[in-house]
Length: 293
Length: 256
Image (tube, rainbow over all chains, first blue to last red; front, side, top):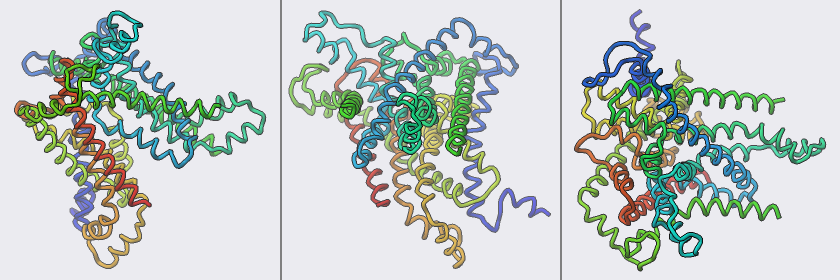
């Protein structure tokens, strides 16, 4: 009896297997599940100047998120992240299609060149953008030398600079999933569409777009979510003038010490992520059904 | 015509991706302070870097942290990948789902949740908190790398070993490990790189007395432009390029 109760927890006949499962579950529960539940819990508590939190339940933190002051920050941050995502998509979609049309011999090299930025320090790459945009940087000095402008133009510490930085750092994350759907795009379906008399535009609109949708959504997720959180890009390229959601969360936790409010903002970000993931899974399912037909 | 247009477009995007990095590296060797005019070739910024004691301490801390993270993540990640591929157990889908969520969730969300946990437990922030956090966010990437290699693996080889009386651990060590070590090494390199590059999680997990390189760079980069940062950036780029090349060579050599 006792052994039967005990077996699901630790099977002595297979100690290695049980040990491995314990390790993984233990790790994920202790360092992923528990901390996230903690944050959700904290977001419903009141702030305390000494002990970070006071144990009385309130919805005030969520109400404050919709206070015009913070709502403005969130909407502007969301606006920038969405703009960066859309621009990444516009640049990345034809690019990924182009790479998938190149002769197979060259494709691995081209993909390798895209993975390099993924492996290199994003802070260093953000700094590289700063070097170009600075008042005495390459772009301004070049424009003055050519005679197009006489005074340096303010490029750095603007919203535009932050958006450029986000695009530069995150573009590969958009292209990689797009490339993988374009590579699997079935030529026979495109040919069938053309044979049935569809114009190139109609084929694109009704065959290519729906079939590459999972890649589009995956790419948008991989750009949009980090774009809201990467506070160091806003810090380095936007100065203190441009804020992302990440900057707000960071300052609430590290400077203002208002944990409940920071936690509420983080929960909001997580909920947004969950909704986007749901949209992704639905689109994958829909495409599978259509191809199966 | 449209083919050349397409190629031109590809070339343009690659140029825009690599131009800033190239400029950064070139001006790391510039003899004067300017980020525009060329004053001749010089190693002086690299020398200044290596003479900066506190920066070198932070760099050593980071290398130690990255190597520890990579090693532990490689072990835990490989065991996880093996469990996912070989074992049938309750809650497998939940486990996969959780790893997926870890990979997708914004780093800042993970960072504050771990900060809340460690403060609640009364833990001193520093090496240990950084290590635990770095392993957690590297884990899904290593699991994927190893799992991809395992999925092409013939399970009958391991069953044969078990039938011949080998224990599970012996089977993994003598049958599986010799065949999948390239994925393990690639996972190690990836974990090392991710840990060395991380800013967001480290910002929250660091404590007094344990300074790490990315945060030092962060504070240098915020202040303004300095050729020293160019030199440091060039070194880091070189390091990640080497580890990417190694990982690429290891993984493709095995396959062909």
